[in-house]
Structures are given as structure tokens and as C-alpha cells.
Length: 274
Image (cartoon, rainbow, N blue to C red; front, side, top):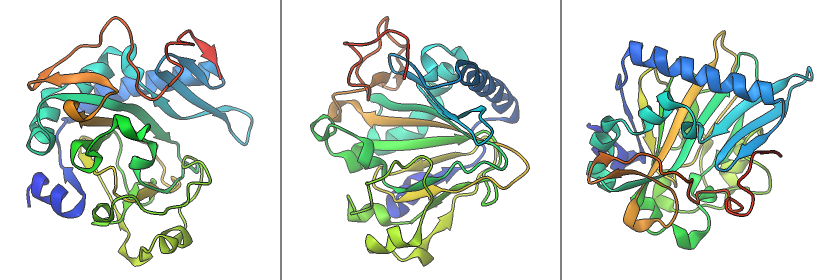
């Protein structure tokens, strides 16, 4: 089954070996540089859409589980999000005129929790009126930088769960940092026996629907688990986001960031700690 058929059938797809080992080595170095920036800040920091999610670990040291929009200042990561291979993968599903809503790095260090509770990405596509035809216009993608295995906290998914649309999953707590529970699935009418592990090797790309139920657990492996997430949307169906491709051609970032998730972008765009 090709990735288009797999995506349409299951709500997700995996394409193996899209980026070469040499390319992944360069990307990994850029990812590590961004992580070091977060650690140096020592606490959560924002500059426009660029956001370092920095928390305090059990030992009092800073922990960086996520950074949003590093591509505003990291040329390597910016080039990756505009790579023509994305259009090859996405155009059969959502066309070649694409905006980008998500540009995000995730880290899970060995021994860290790094949990993401069961959720649908549709929960975060707000305000509702800015995202039209969400299920058929938006695709989330993730590039594996390290081996993603059950032990290292790979994504876990419920195949076909996207077909039900928005589900009544618990939204009372933050997704990042909270564990997946079987009770959360059962309360939404999902059988925990349907869960699969999305295992990937460096260079593999995963694609999933905004309505696919997914999460991930702690990293008990002996290596870190780095993941580069980019979310693309059919431009005609979205009022937010940076342009990524017009007619299949990459569009560079403009001189000023545009509204994505940070609603106070125009009122408070300056660098500040959060």
C-alpha cells in the first residue's frame, strides 16, 4: 500500500528513508544547537512565534521538551521544512499551495518521562473559524532523527480513529507531561487493544490526520528521541500560518512573522521570558 492509500485508509502513513543518513546528521546537529539555546535560557522564552518550552527537572536543571518555530533563525531547519520532498508526499492529498502551522522540535532524553497524553491535534487548531475542512486540508508530519521504538517513547496511535472526527477526550489537563491512560480511551469509546506503536528509523517520515488519536510515553532506551514536526495545510482553507509552498515551489519567510498560534504576536512581539 502506498502512503496515500495508507493515509486515507488508516489516518496515518509512514514513508521510509526519505532523508539520508548524511542529511540526518546535519539536521541532528541543528536540533542539538537549538536544544543548547533552550538550556542556556534556563526558563521558557518567547520571541514572536519562536518559543522555547523550558521546564525545571527533578534535579533543578533546565529541561527542554519542545521548541516552536526554530526555523525563524536556524537555516538548516528552515531548509528542511521547505524541502521539495514534502510537496511530493503531500500534494496528492492536500495540493501544492500550502501554509505551515506547526514547525516544532521535540526531545525525549533517556530516562525522561516526556509523556504526551492521548489527544487529537484538532484540539489545538484554534480558532475554529480559521481552519476550514480541517480533516481533509491539514496533515501533520514528523521526521525521525533517532530510532523511534516502544522503549524510546515512540508515538502510539489508534488506526482509523480519525474517521470519528472530534472525540470527547479529556481536555482538562495539558497534553505535554501527562501520561496516556486506558481510561481516557475508554471514555471516548476506544478499545485500548487497538493501540499500535509507530516505530521509525532515522530519516523516516510519519504523516497523520489532525483527528487521529495518538500520544507517546517515556523514554527508557539508552539514546535520546528527537523528532522534527511540521504541519502543513491547504492554503485556501486556512487564515493563519506561514506560506511554505505556492504551486509546489518553496516560499521563504517574509520580513515579519505572521499570526500562527501566538495571539499576542502583534501586541507583544519582543523577546521576553514567560
